[in-house]
Amino acid sequence: MILIHCPYCDEKRAEIEFAYAGEAHISRPVDPSTYGDEEWERYLFIRANPKGRHHERWRHIHGCGRFFNAVRDTVTDKFETTYKAGEPRK
Amino acid sequence: MTRFSAFSLFAKALGGHKDWPEQWPDAAPKPAYDAIIVGGGGHGLGAAYYLAKKYGITNVAVLEKGWIGGGNTGRNTTIIRSNYLYDESAHLYDHAVKLWDGLSQELNYNTMYSKRGVMMLAHNVHDIQSFKRHIHANRLNGVDNEWLTPEEARAYCPPLNISPDARYPVLGAALQRRGGTARHDTVAWGYARAAAALGVDIIQNCGVTGIRRGVDGAVEGVETTRGYISCKRVGVSAAGNSSVIMQMAGLDFPLESYPLQALVSEPVKPTFPCVVMSNTVHAYMSQSDKGELVIGAGTDQYVSYSQRGALHIVEHTLAAICEIFPIYRRMRMLRTWGGIVDVTPDRSPILGKTPVKGLYVNCGWGTGGFKATPGAGDLLAYTMAKDEPHWINAPYNLDRFRNGRLIDEAAAAAVAH
Image (cartoon, rainbow over all chains, first blue to last red; front, side, top):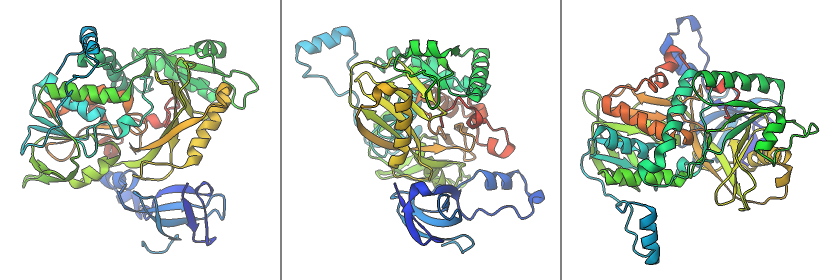
């Protein structure tokens, strides 16, 4: 089980306290009516799925309940950093 | 290649089994091929075999970065079934089940396909309704599936606890009698041996590092850890690493790769006659011919290529196993492991052409690709040989994520995902 640092609680806790919430920094369409099929496909379905550095969201569901972002290596599962929602991509 | 038969086994036994020849050569890459398959699992080896056997394309190489059958082919829980809800799925998976039937004879290699039945347990009203809907849909598609009462379910699988006091009591079950298990390694080995006999090169320790494309955008060849290989027809069958390979051709795919865990117990005498799955409490189990209970756990929640997962996922499954089969509460588990599964948004595979000319793909099988091994190989070979998809895999195109014609088996409750 991996240990995750919650940037709000400022504590490293076990993974079972957290819920994974998918790739980070995927912004909602600003003006959905202008979106064509290709943009919708990209927004809804296409994911980076990299072998290496991955930006992802987690939620400290059994703690403070807040969403935050993280950078994790998907080969080693080691976290590089976690940071608060709204902060720029690291 | 020695043909296996009762007589050849007997004759070799007299000689102490000392002089069995190599079953297939460990090939080195040639500078060019007519077709290349990336990924030496069951699906990829199957595709190479059918390309040679059915379509006469024998100048084929299978490139495997590790050893053949060492990825998800050797890591799954070997369950075979075709009781999927939608027409497209029923056609696809039943095509594979039909091929499993004669596979050992065709390959002259014992895949140990055992039609011991796959039983899915219903624990609540929603399960009952959903499973009965599946049964009717399956039967309309010519796929066998039948409803069992709790007593009939226990008669079919005696270790099952059908007590009404259980935390999640068994209210009935759906049984596909044609479902069952096969020996996963032999599927890879059998296809490799049969394909090599037809002239296919099985190249291990040869990872693909790049896909070279010409000025017209079409595939010209692949860069590998053992040098450049020229080839105008490349089929990618790389499971969890599919999006990495597709990135080499400049394609973004709707895939995410997750660790999926499985485990086996210490071997015991035959006690468990079939395959039992419960999606509600998330457990599924069978017993191998060696005697181990083979148990499938769930995926971890995060994207990873690490081929390992967390213990709490395994604990969750074992808690369910202990509840459904109290007889195994004191069994000891021997090994756990993980494989990386490539999951699509609709939990159905992508099998067909890509926007890049000469590049074909077979991916997105997620947590359930083993059962489809012969079918996926056959259909990838068809698509590569004809440069167009077979009607069975035509709906499994990449365009469906753009035009919305999803095959939404993920929402169908009789699928363990």
